[in-house]
Length: 374
Image (cartoon, rainbow, N blue to C red; front, side):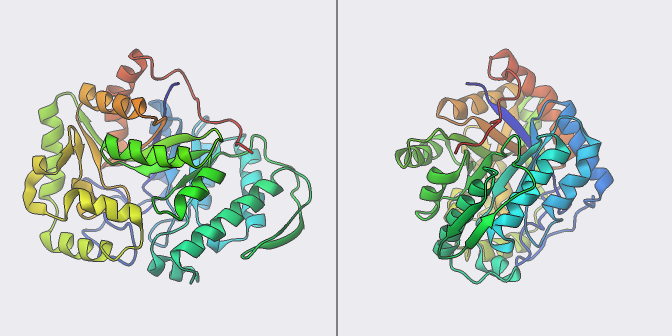
């Protein structure tokens, strides 16, 4: 099976250092040098399309621009690029979400992918008026996705649950194709929801053995077809030395006080996945650039200040391709990548690594799911 490559839209800002506006409850580092205006985001989107990425992930939160509106504005700026729109089930009704997705599919001619973000940070959730605890949020997400999928059948749908009750919910027309559901979460509450409802299960970039263990846990919970994806940053250069020099520049630009504050606040996160990210580097800036290499060509330095995905593929184009291939060998089919700055790093990966993956027979066109699994 071939792999699918996606890029990232930095809707909280971009720059030549690790831009930390990723969680509004955390102390921000230096401000973004590039504002996330629509012209710059369109430039990134067109570049991602040009160099061969299938889609782009757009995040969700109070620290970034709204994903639905931003990506809708970019539909006319691109031709084939798909938009992996992140959204939070607790902040809109499932009927409205089903309607929005259906409309989006028609106006984009089938270019919508959906990333369901249950939310692992109560402080952030409460900004949206959501006061459920983490396990309750996953329970609600499970119901939410049942309702959305039911409405997408195009027939009147009725549902009675703990969190949602709808009667004869309908749409103008069912989406065609049905948008695939991407879903992440590492807790015991998250994995059964992923197994039951997701088309693609996403994990952050841990060493391959840890990722393989997580994949096995999800597979053990379902007999449904499910794909697996991974979220990583990338620093790929013509030589390994150049790549590690670029990583060192990112590390050297980090303020120790900002690192300490970020680690303190990240440490309070309820997210099991976030805690797994923290454990990879221990918040220790003094380890130096190669001391934060937690697996050959897998670097944990980004996670010193950035919440969420905190690891990067670092090395020559061939070394990065090798690690992509290793992840694929354990079951990863989709790669959601990013880098600082996102415009330049899209070119580095697209022009340097992607041709090698194609030569190795790992790319044969867009294999992203056309239809969501029932």
